[in-house]
Image (cartoon, rainbow, N blue to C red; front, top):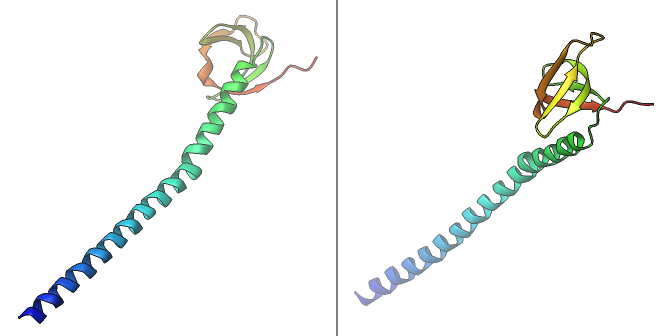
Length: 110
């Protein structure tokens, strides 16, 4: 009976070591997947947001802009969150809009 007890004790020790090794593999797997998502999804989005913020910070009156809805216009006035944009050649068509609706700024070359 004592031989049987020793075999059971050795098997349980091997199982504990194997379980510990599989836990390390699972943790490593989760870390690799997390790093993959960071470099493929989160980091490029942050870079794009920084580029957009810098573009909006450098925007001045007289610049030509493209809105998210596809309209081109000229910036007439800039406040904290809004911009007044003039569309087309009609001087009466001035519309206030949020800065977040601007997707592209073209500097006016003088």
